[in-house]
Length: 332
Image 1: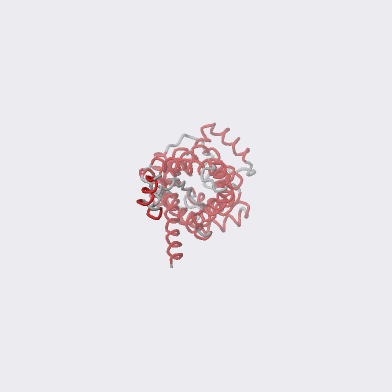
Image 2: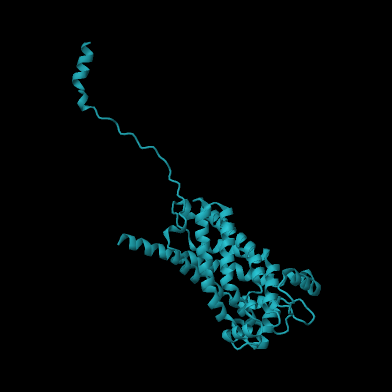
């Protein structure tokens, strides 16, 4: 008893201090927020810039692809990229590679503004805050292309006619006026159904592949390993190139049909009785065989792989710019 009293007196309760315990460690799981707080008009501007840069940079390759896919009345012979390029240069000179670029400029900006903004909004609504929802990415891509193709198809038709026209039209406005006068308004949308049928699987494959590859690259990137959640331009470019190349290869046959419908009656190209996809398919198979459905697949891949890399890199850079602007305005 004496010992207990002595101990109590030497160590009064008021002198005892609790030993602080280390807090429980709960690693934070960082989930990228959808749209990152960007406004709708900012998504449209970012998409418009990305689409314009993409198509302007890759326009010569698109011209070569169009020449390879156009079905003429004369007997068909296999045409490679070098043959098509030399033929264009020899016949019309280097400037012919850029014929129709203004039509592309008029259409690509507004169409891609619709394209990316609709994709981001649909993805946010359908994904349920799950950035790994591949089905949401695919469905959002389909919504995006249906809406953007309604904007882009008329200018795409004008662009392709100018690309192979060989002086048939004086320019964008001359082509628009003559088509309207000679063929009617419906000619601008003759390929719309084919375009949507082509671009629906194209964008479904494209966006799903892009998001999946970007996520995979992000997991193995040094920045992610070091705890930095920022995605570099190299990740966006690589994921975009993989997505664009794969989607282009899968949908080449429908792209051939689209080109046939848009270029019919121009510079010796066949004219079809209707815009039925099956009729065009049968005509191509009868005249050129199954190889006709694969015409232009290589330049199409050579177009879409770097084009998608350029487009996604530009788009993500524009989004980052607007995020910084929004952050500065919130701080102010």
